[in-house]
Image (cartoon, rainbow, N blue to C red; front, side, top):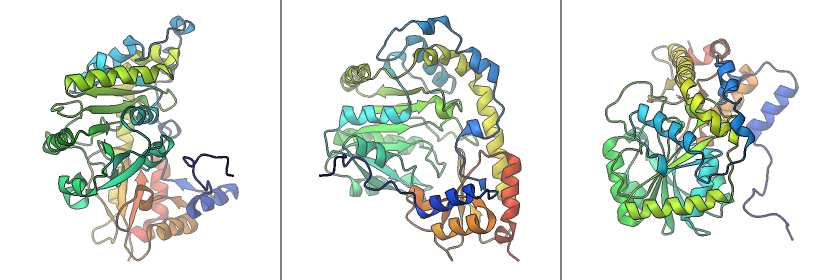
Length: 392
């Protein structure tokens, strides 16, 4: 008998592209990785002394467990959101070790085994793994390209699983970089409330908009006809993935909101995952966040401009329109599949891009390009690809 849970994969073997990357790295090939998503490895300038000084707090030597998380840290989270124009209630915040952990808490809160959560397609392929680990099914619903990757209520209803308990949204979506709009948000609230569904909205990239747009809305903003959970964390907000702090904000009809918070507090009390040094340092890190975000956005803008400039008029390649985030989508000629393009660029030019199937696009051929790498490396990669991007 197999001793392992079916919630873990039957095979942990890397795919063909990943295997080839490992082989080339082992051989010393001069790879340029344009899938880099870790800001701490991207050569960004961080306020290092201030970040580390925030950890030097004698209060961290005392253990004072709080299921919701230290109030001072929750106040810092609320103040940050208020500064971004979206009010968050301190008493409606729960602190976790990460947004991934927060998803697990919410699946435990909302779902019985074999219930479903509706997840967007295309989007980052984390939801299926997290849901499976909690015995929950991730059922996809489509984001429509003709709606700039927005949610179509009729399509959502067609795909709605009979045992769905929640709808997951990513705002802005990763990798399409498209934001939730106010009219879309109102329709989703009405749809979810009518069917007794919760809304889980991941806003880790919300602060990285590339231009102002009055239509854009955070899920912290009303209406909240349905039970609504907004997720974010320091990993993206402050570019500090090593400082493990995520959070959940709970909104909705008062009776549901109050009971959800009580039950979440019970769940959180079983884990108490956030370390005291992180909790005590959080407020000071938020003070540093505008500087860090400015550095990241400057990098993103520079690399996106370089990518767009590398495609002359008439190029069979194009950069898809987007509104924010750290990723650009590059549409390749459909003479090859995404996997073939990825392998070809890797083998022939030593440039690693992420094929679109990683995000479950419905059609070919997309390649995701991280905009975080060092500009020197980014421009060197584009130079290697110039013969393909600028065909005669």
